Amino acid sequence: MKLKDFGERVIDFNCQLHYSGELPEGFHVLNPYFDNAETIEVMKKFYRRFYGDFNTRKFIVGINPSRKGAGVTGVPFTDTKRLDSVCGIGMHSAHTHEISSVFMYDMIAQFGGADQFYSQFYINSPFPLAIVKLTKEKRWVNANYYDEPALFEQLKGFMISSLKQHIDMGLDVSEVFVLGKKNAFFIEKLNREAKLFERLTVLEHPRFIQQYKSKEKQLYIDKYILSLLGNGEDN
Image (tube, helix red, strand yellow):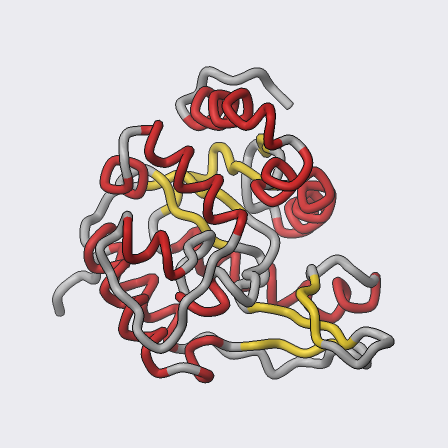
């Protein structure tokens, strides 16, 4: 039997991805692979183009997908604009602009471009599906897996299993790059319990940088690249 490359392993993971566990009242999980048939097609094109090899990659861990990023394209931190303009993969059923994607792809460009970046790094989240919550105004908005203690506890087992599956695809566990300081607090909890990674390096989340530190964006891009290349300061 032919050994599956990194990209095909990611595709298999995404195609079987399903959360059927409990959720606190007012929360809901969105699965882009069930909600839009084109998402599976563009996701497959992406991973076959950039991950069709047997490279061991370093892991960059986000929080959970947003509705306008991976919640649509199936590719973490990638909205439809960047999917098309940078990755060369058009999506016709949706058009999205996501601010975290803007930062990530500006950083990727300075790193050396998508081919070089994705040959060395894999991005995903402990909870790899989008989460939304119902507001008092009866509107569904993006939510994070740690927004309520009960939500984190109900998702914890699924997240540990998901992270282990990612690692088995061919990831270097000597160091993991965690996006967001609050995210890092909870990843540290998961890591203490499941002993997944040897070392956590924490970077500011792209959304935080774009929203609150946009004037210092270049400093954060430099910090990302230095850290990813192993030249950053310990966190």
